[in-house]
Length: 460
Image 1: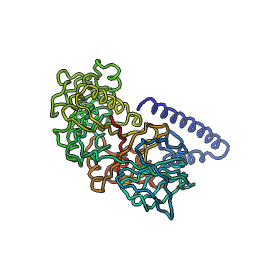
Image 2: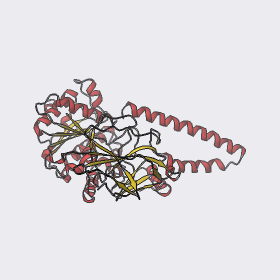
Image 3: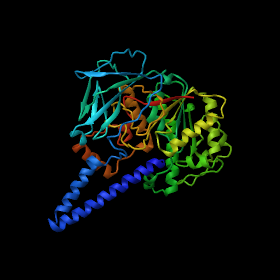
Image 4: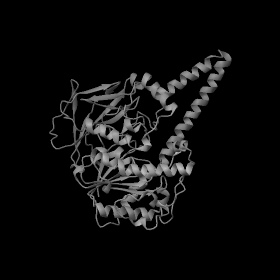
């Protein structure tokens, strides 16, 4: 997490502690002056209510407007809804990405059940208690005459359609920058699985938080080394499920959560926080090409930049797909995009387009909200983002299933949920109507396997 999200989370936890303290004081007074059995009963009911309706990490008010600007070449027109269908008087031929700007107001039920809008055969969900400007993703559907049915919310006046035209970037030479082993699959499996000229470079081993492997009798360092080897293997092997050969996959082997520190001291080696290793060559033996850091194995920023420059010169991509530096707050994701831009400054070959993705958000851990298989509405943007064009290609049901199976190959997305999360999901299923897919228990099986993928387009 970056500093902003850390501050948001700290404030959220502080407020929750204060609310808990006040509740405990009130319960203690009830126990003294009313009945001894009332506080325990209310505590159980309060915990159930918290798990059902107040456990989401939402670090902004659902009444806030989303702040989006679009580029000058975006075609924007007012539209209306008549008899439950969208009426558009303009010709949208040739526009591939369609976004409907509207104002949503939750009903009283929409404070307890997830407000959503059914759009043809799609559904897109929003925050409970929503009351502000939001953006539906209509890409992949015929917009004129499309049925629009709100549930647990109302649609206000003043609708506007934003239409954007893009080339099919998946048929261009593409290089995916993956900070960790599963990031390419989460963001862009649908695109690289229909591309014959995609390459994937993974920057880190993904070795930290390996407590689950200590059950095998390993100490912390040995568990981290095993996890690093497994996830490095995932980064080379899983893309083959989507048709990307191992000859087009590169693992750089740097260490998790060390990229920002490396950037600040470019010539200083930063070893793993948990594995004890300080030589990136330990996971490079299957790489299809030699890289500058193979000479000394030092985990330095200068070596990382040289490695990325060599990868760019080798694969000569027209498009770079990399984390969104303003929207995705993960430290390694921000540093990865910084690194690839610095590398581009050193290369003769110059990619023309950046496609930016967000696998994490600052202020909403549930986005994309709603069930798996549904569309991706635009994420919350409480502070205005750069006015980028958007590209939102569609995935059919077969490709969505293949994407889910690609995620199932990732060791970091395997394993059973802790008991606390299992109880939370059961409570939310019974009281809040939420559903999770059968393809996997990790939250990314719900969030990432959708009928859309979503990218912000920047020209270099």
